[in-house]
Amino acid sequence: IAADRNATAATEVAATLAGSGHFAIQIDVADATSVDTALTRAEAQSGPIDVLVHAAGVLLTEDDGHHARFWESGLARWEQTMAVNARGSFLVAAQFLRQRVQQPVAHGRVILFSSVAGQTGGGKTYADYAASKAAVLGFMRAAARERAPLGITVNAIAPGQIETPMLRKNIPAGTLVDPKVVPLGRFGEPQDVAAAVRFAASIEAGFITGATFDVNGGQRIQ
View 1 (cartoon, rainbow, N blue to C red):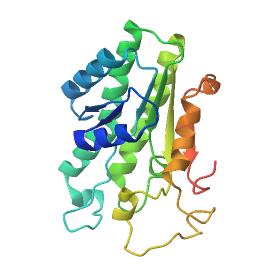
View 2 (cartoon, rainbow, N blue to C red):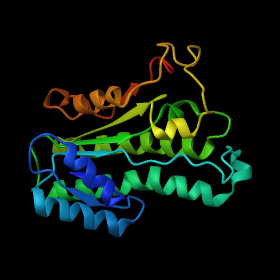
View 3 (cartoon, rainbow, N blue to C red):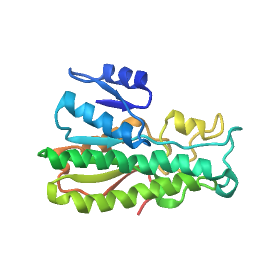
View 4 (tube, rainbow, N blue to C red):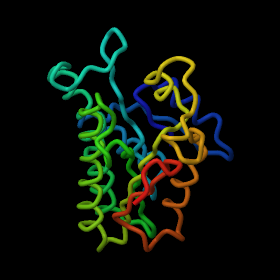
């Protein structure tokens, strides 16, 4: 089930998936009513969902494209970032888990998206983004403890520099990989992140919960 605020985009993604039975739903993760309606609709059509992957996120810039420091950018940007990245993770995971209490599944998985910025504080001008992604990690760990008795694992993916439109929008045009920033000498690809998600969702990962999967090319090693 592909879910996105843009229903057309979700439909296009669902159409690319192998096999049959895939479909799309429209959702605004920052809106509680939208989340509850979307997940209820999804399960009415598909039955109980085993795996939830919440990857929605924003990294905002000012209207002129530059990154203002947090005391310059104002409350609106802070709250918009928190609404999608932090509140969205809470709303989607909470609704999914309520539905799993009502209808348990054998191998429940919740996979949230944080960022290397949430672990390091980000760059010079990413306070709102870093704070929102750090909040995801705190929530993930608490949820993992609370839902463990149901056999549901809750983990997070923390990508580094991944080759996506969001990344390209937020680096200077023509900038190439700086090996000093990424020890493996390249930006990650979406497939690198997907591989971590695939493992976290698998039956083999059933004894891993409350963990953060670092997909950052060595940018942060701990």
